[in-house]
Amino acid sequence: MSRRGFARTGGSVLFPVIVKGMTESMDYGVVAMVGNPTSDKGRGAAVDERVRGLLTEAGERYGFDVIDLTGDSFDDSLANAREHIDGYDHLVVVGGDGMIALGANAVGSSGKPLGIVATGSGNDFARGLKLPVNRIDTAVEGIVGAIVRGSHIDVDMGHVTALPGAVATDPTTGEETEPSQEVRAGMAPSFDRYYAGMLSCGLDASINDRANHSRLPGGSLRYFAAVLVEVRHLKRYGYHVKATLADGTTEELDIISPMLTVANSRHIGGGLEVSPYSRFDDGLLDLIWIDHMPNAVEIADAISKGYNGKLLGSKIFGWKRVRDIEITRAAEGDEPPVLMADGEYIGRLPVTVKACDRALRVLVPPAVARLQEREHGENRVLAMLRRDGRDPVTGEFV
Image (cartoon, rainbow, N blue to C red; front, side, top):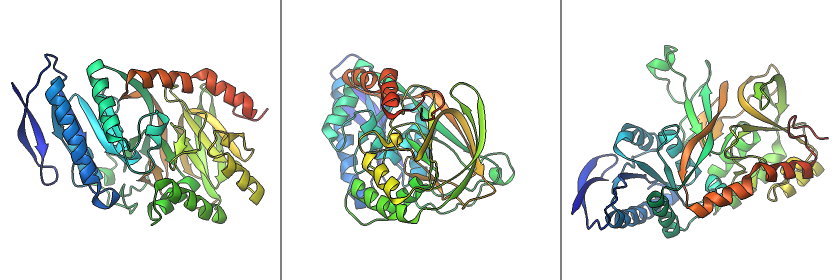
């Protein structure tokens, strides 16, 4: 028996191939994959080939087709995944947080599950979900098992949309892009993106940008080195925020700060816990900012707490849970840097950001689903807030 699928050759060109030897009677439909062949100085192509082969073998055994929608760039691959969304039942992405962002933007709010083969450096979203990192065979085995058993979890996403006057940038280079006719005519925002992890608006964006251009080996090392450099040159960025808080009330204020982050997940930079209170399924985002210009002792204290889940116990940080937030330029302060979401460049202020409740379905083995509830449940977060001395409603220290 054979089933007809697709494979890729030369960019985004698709051609039919035959998948033979299906042995199971169940039909799990079509699994699409998107890789990142240019990652790791081109070595990502070999990883993509490995994943494609493992998925094809599993498809022969369990009865699903595999199509490859990898394009020549982030935007090209995203366009492929969106254009062909009616032609597949599951999407698998291969790579780091940027590829997860691609997958989230392709299938977010569609109900179609996303499988994650986390490779390379960073992988903060995958780490937060307790998924295997740089273990290709294990990751694919878990995805296939989740498909066969129908196992998944539904997680929140952030949705960032440009307001009039915002400027879009290339997601890979950060360079400003030419607006489309629709944008110039006011018919569409200059950018409109979902993100799974964090929207970085200040120091964290500058750190990420420096790490992206570093020649040091290893993502975590690059990020840590970038932290040490950037904290020596803190700027006072000017933000005006208008937020709907968790209790439905609205708060509006200027924040003059080196850092402002709107987080959905806990980690950034290969393990730094910027947002330790974040939960994947509470329908809320975490607004985090540096409350005042810190001195050297406060900076050292914050860095020491960055990898043990106690960062927000430091008095220099403000924290609130929000449903949505509008971020514009304040009259005072420096111009904020290019915003980054899941490590990919987005554009410049002004923006509006909304929490999308359980809008992304992620393929995970049943054991991982159970682990998520145990390690990221409400009771655990409340215990962390009591430990750090914060009020769970106002976010203030008590």
